[in-house]
Length: 551
Image 1: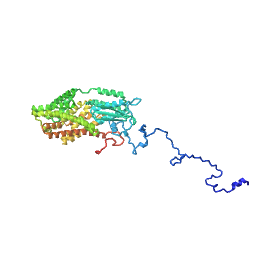
Image 2 (image 1 turned 90 degrees about the vertical axis):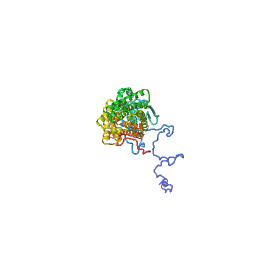
Image 3 (image 1 turned 120 degrees about the vertical axis):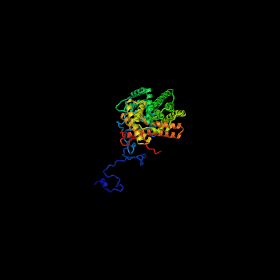
Image 4 (image 1 turned 180 degrees about the vertical axis):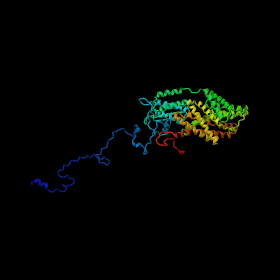
């Protein structure tokens, strides 16, 4: 054994046999020398854990940095509510009125992204022109007497059809406004328009509804230029009935109304002559630029004067029926129904303005009739307020008179000839229901009027949805036989004879009948929508104003 081998076989010391010394034959790798500056904090990431590094971006949270947005179609899960977002299915076979009304009653965040129906320019929709077209269409609808909610639905339909989904229309009594915001980081575009002049022409109203229906239809392509051209034609079109025909219709309406309250042939002629004279005087005042208040005052005088003159001449006729018939042609039934409808749908400012206008019209009628009745009583006219209790029950004549009244009312509203026959039958049905409940069933006139008006609203809404048109031509003229003309006259007569208490009672009854008509028409319209297929997946998904419980 050599000396080096003997050295290796010697027992090693305890330090040499340490557990940290690698055994013989194993080459130990040199550990890297750590620098003194290296961190050993417990917050340091462990070695071997690869974390993807985010590329450096602009500092967030600064008041001068642009806010970051995300796509509504591809929103991250963090923005989804725990219960999920309800799906809104805008069914294509539902009329655009109901689709847009449903979306208007939604919060903005829950409205679905629209599918652009109409062709727009390559660089996107011409926002100012679309807003201008929308305001012009809304102006014609509001000037024609349409309700605020229906005007907003039409404006919303036009904007969304041209690709403007972030739009908010607003309607008040004489002001239209619309605001469009392209995105959350861009300035909104706002436009407004004031309705200076209003007139009743349901033929023009039907044409505007047809234009909105074509714009909203995905099967019909209507460009902006085509929409402007059609709108200009609608504005230039003449009324379907001439002025003298309207005057004759006013006389026929007054004569038919006098028959409803018990008049005969002489009363029919006298009421018709008085109403036509009042209409011509109102046209004369309008040509001189007098406000509508004075026009109503002047128009109410000839019918009252005709009744007082027949009484002074001792002609054996019912003067009260003559005056009542003349008042039927002046009562603002549509304005009252529109005001109450706006209030029931939540447009309280517009409703208050409409009802205030109705009140001014009634005051004008009251002044005109009271002036004539006062001088008539002084001259010896014996007008009996209790004549209201002597109305005869003649079902055949009254149904025929109610249909004639509705026909004349439809002509005064400048309705399309295709709708005149339908609304005339609707008016006859309304009076038949009222007569059966009030005269046969001995039910109160307020409840009978409300039921008949509800039936008018139901039929009118169904007919309008069948033709994809406005409901006004099918409901306004049909409520004519139900207007409270006799209650208004007898209230004014009692006041003229210094019986203020009895007069106020009659006028209160007239107001109750008017409210019954308005609420009945609106309720019938709402009931009709319960039987129609509306957008929304689940039952009861139709949006409406939530109950506030008075807070």
